[in-house]
Image (cartoon, rainbow over all chains, first blue to last red; front, side, top):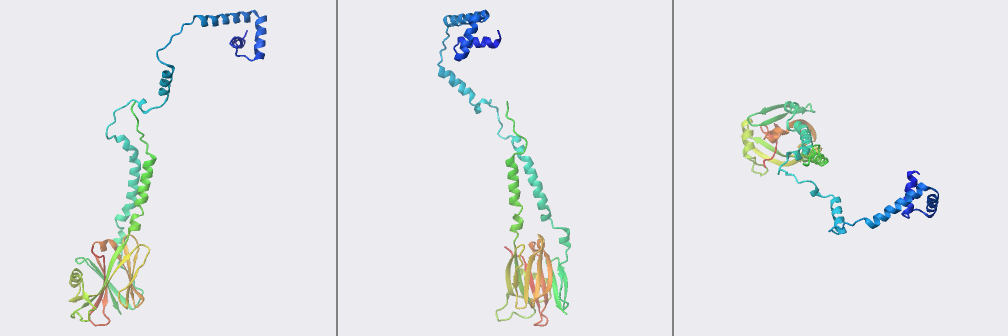
Length: 155
Length: 160
């Protein structure tokens, strides 16, 4: 007798088989002595359990146990053991370090040429164009008076 | 078990850095606005004319001019304040014959065009850094109307 047949026989005794299967198992028990022996043994075991098993009542109610289970299944912050956290944790700021450094570098690259005039600006001649041939000009600068003068003369 | 903080940069930090740069980057360009004072000054050894057309020049400028040039008196004919912004070329008329046009060439240079009787007479460039430090950009010439006198166009940054 296979294990599957044994399980089917057990299900038949528990009344869990459909009618067609139940008829087939009953016929098997009638003609097969091993099947009949197993059926008898299972019936006896069920009877003994029903008659002899002692009940062990617990003091708490059913609702109490379900509440405990539900409470442990629900994730809670307090599930993590509390650890001491310092008021200032430098590790928290490390995450901001790279973006801040990148922003500073970009800002520096952008600002540097604007803050320091190029060499060409300092040495650039103040006069760049005198389109008329009728005009003559000369330029001089007074360092003491902070004054650049372009003198325009009609020729 | 102690909580482990992520050391990898947070997306929020990158966004914050990008926003900071986006806000700062265009600020100097958009905010670059140059306020100038252009003064037409008459240099002469004659006393102040009584027609009321001329005013006294700012003493500080008069002192500086008189230490460089030979004339004893400097009278203010006209004073105009002009604001120059990037991309714009404001033009001001200092007299019937004299006009000025201003242009910001770059972050460091101001270009000044002098027009005489409608024609371009001279283009000069001036350091903005020097102007901010009190430099006077002076365009000048001999007077055609009165021998021995001179005209000056003094461009400076107005004192706040």
